[in-house]
Length: 147
Image (tube, rainbow, N blue to C red; front, top):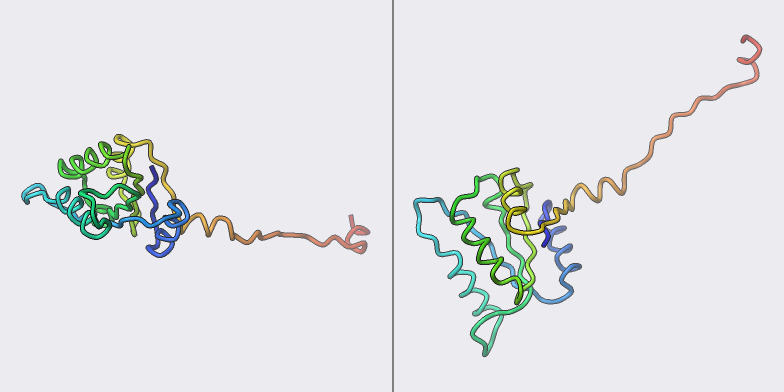
């Protein structure tokens, strides 16, 4: 599984390259510990109503947007949704994206659940296109005579 961080347009382009087919995009909203947790039901309902016609359940690639969680600390609702994703990994392919860079706690929690690879779309491009500066010195014959 991958966690793609950075600019939204670049992250979506990276998802399209990875998945090479239509996918369901789901925004996993932040839910504090005091609220009712309905994200799993919302995922099932939205994926069924947006991506299927005559089937009871969507089975295919999905992109989970965790941008709202990127600056928060994971709670039991975050864990419950990750358990849900893990239980569906045989039928579905998941990629997690974040428009911001996730904090250390979120990344560590994702690594606990999945064998995750972090891809930074903004940093990767800047590292590849970095101009190399070369510092050179000119040594002339005249300077050689003073040595």
